[in-house]
Length: 358
Image 1 (cartoon, rainbow, N blue to C red):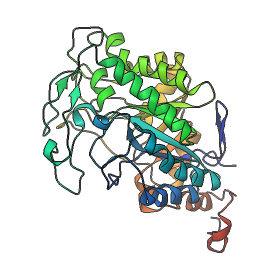
Image 2 (cartoon, helix red, strand yellow):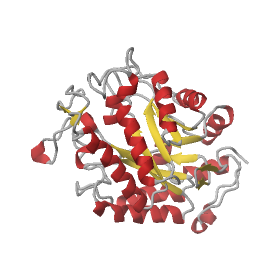
Image 3 (cartoon, rainbow, N blue to C red):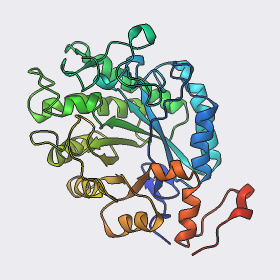
Image 4 (cartoon, helix red, strand yellow):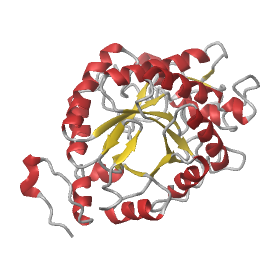
């Protein structure tokens, strides 16, 4: 059996293979109310039909002001649960599992979606006041308000409440988004966090918000549900967030009940040089694996079956997350299995289209 199409068990969850759909923003809640619709069912459901072991839904806000844009989904209200449940039920019927990335955009919120403009959305057009670790703006966006220390417990509570809604919506796992320059990354990085209170300064203070969230999310969902964390392993600038800090915080998160770390990079600031290329972030996942002993996922320019199999077979990586290739081909998982001569179950409706094995 190939490594890519071998099962993996995390807590009580058995996942049929190690080829998962990475969470990707779609900006497609046309009602601007955080409620997903038929488009999301087709989008996520087709990838489940297409052979993915887990389909992780895009960054979904834990509060209205936690959205990246007015068109982003959420789990901050009870009326958002049932539409997600339709999707998770369908994914499960295809033999796949589902995850959802819970997020708060912080100073990178209230933005236009890529197809409708750039910069911040005015409050008169459905935007909102953003907030962050400090009042320093992200380039091209309105300056946020600095969160007071008294407001931070509400952020923690919002993540825990959203995690409970995710359970009710039928999701099999939760990923806490602490990467790509969003709120939790804004607190983690010394570049964006210049606070002088309990949530700023030394690493343990900058990590405090994330650690409180991990603890409360684990308490909320119980011991059976897997909890993942996405980190940006580096800001790509001297004096910023880096792999050593990532590994240390991941160790603390593991002690609080986190199960898998998903290692990406960048997103906090603009104008940095990112050395992209095939599998360019795999080394970050391998480093976190060595440091924590936890399951890790590699993501970033993993685009074909042979490459994905090699990442798993030769490295210290447990899962590969694929984004753009699943956008290009919703049935990438079925095609990858054929290319690797892996015998997997196809949707019975599609058996006539089965690729011949390599």
